[in-house]
Image (cartoon, rainbow, N blue to C red; front, top):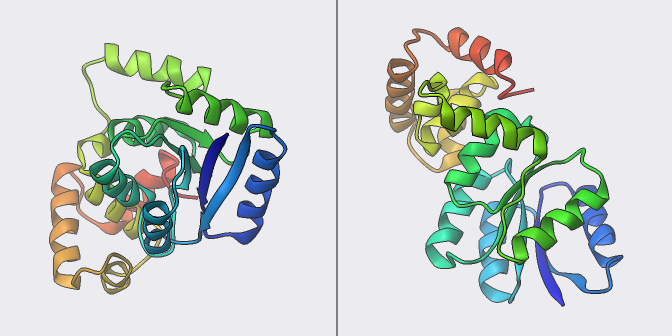
Length: 209
């Protein structure tokens, strides 16, 4: 039996995932969580074979949860699910230790296929993004946002989505001053000057809705 824990802040999404997974005779959802803190607690307490993790959670980024899981249970397969296009995110989450990346608008069959793939030791990405990743590895150039650390990338997306430095600090449990330092570093790395530049770039590269 493949035991799965799902992490998503929307009850409807969790219910849908549970129904899709439960329809398979050799799979079951053994735990659920709606935020990062709860996710870490549930995964520590309940034995599982895979985690389906939303990249956007109310109290932290899925990337932060992934980082913590990789330090505690490096062999646990984690499938990242997101509403965001694969191109700017897939490589980042794979480098961070995820076993796969799946869009939320994918067919149910793709979810099952992805879970089976990662629990058998493989990596799951769509054929289209596999081609893009192959091209990227062959090309020496990097997009500006790929120069950012995971925390810098997260803060850049939060700034671009319209959150103030204080709000970002509250979400990430860091001071506004620390967020301001990150902001300055992000602008320097990306050769930009204002938040408006970040917003325009994030929209153009489909990093935010």
